[in-house]
Length: 262
Image (tube, rainbow, N blue to C red; front, side, top):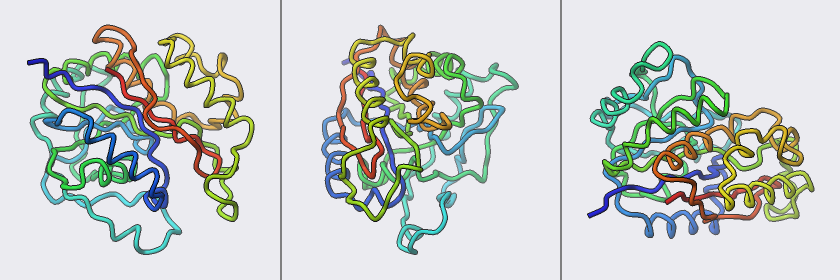
């Protein structure tokens, strides 16, 4: 039986996005259509660290509430998924000779780029999870990391890049409706991204700063787009980019578009 897992890129949002019933419902439905993973590897926009590192494999490591100024309920969220020491060993075997070797951060719990969507997708918290840091934001380097991680798919590991398809917090206006019409640059970049992924144009996506409309407005800093490069690498190594848009729409002007790669 073919056990190859798909690869995902999802827009994870700030913690209050978990209050959006449409988004949480879409994530829950999405996960029900996925093959049951043996483990999950998350590359989150919120962990940049070099040398490249994996998160804790010790049970009970606290979540990382890497945000501030929110109501207490967002700091009360728990997600006690088991760690994945076996997956960490597999990752080490694939990336151990990458720029200083693979390190482990024993104090690093899951950050909100991981646990916010996983609470909705795997609410039982019964799938082992670890995170992998981004040692750089260079598109080609991250794509190459994803390529090297591709064999994990054949072990049943679900690789998730977690970012945001557009991420300019200057557009965020909590006094407007969450589903208000987005700024034109956000809409333009989202449209371009949908077409680029659908056509499998890896070169254009990696060169998005020069190829995409409004790229610098959509991503004043590129850390929320960068996890896509890892996902693309893992997908491309298995035979090309076959991506389908699973979630779309906007939240306070930011694109929630998310993809699944076969």
